[in-house]
Image 1 (tube, helix red, strand yellow):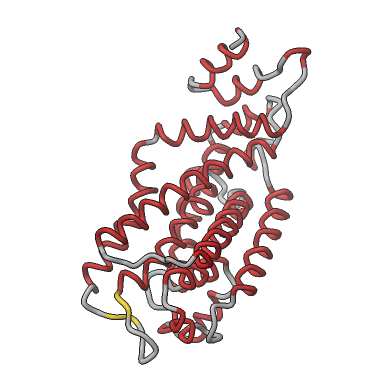
Image 2 (cartoon, one colour):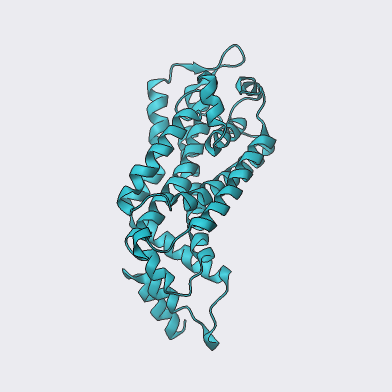
Length: 299
């Protein structure tokens, strides 16, 4: 490791690390590394910062597990379904917990954290370095994917071991899980970046973002059986990504006959992909047009 790299590494661990380290990345010949390299380095910084926030780590990984445990314990003796099929409560609500976990680690976490970083001056300092927006967002994407994978793996393990939820044995279902998971995480990430420009300050970020997430959870079949919700609520939920992520996950973890309880009587995989891709594009456009390195009142 060169002297410059050593200095960069040491400074990256300090309180002003992200800005100072980026400025020190200029390599031999005075040229800045490519976008891929900058994204990887930024991803490393994001991951180190995340693991240092012990309370955030515990909340991110424990929230879906705790919610599943609470609902399964309270309603464990009840079955979900009609004459179509009868399955355990934990099995029916596992897909919703997977979906909401993806939303929390992508949309909510990024919308709040970027707003806070803009408010405390972190983004302003990064703006003074050669770090491009794409590398900064790429680091956030890498953080989202890493935390979402660990969170989901823990949730599935607890569901299977503690609540006897049967996991799919069909490879096709796991393929569905993979593309719904990846597309849902990507959509949540870009929407979180775009939404982060809405709060006027870091202090108001949670107050602005959290109610949106809670409403979407209640109308999207996360805390209640989706087929039991009023028709107008199902229609409203169908506009937003969380409902489609949850429905896609239900197609993975629930028996095939449960598709009859969905709004259209099927899992609607093409519609799921179309809605998530549409929101992905909308999030990208909004994020590109509204992303700001500085606060609104900071010039």
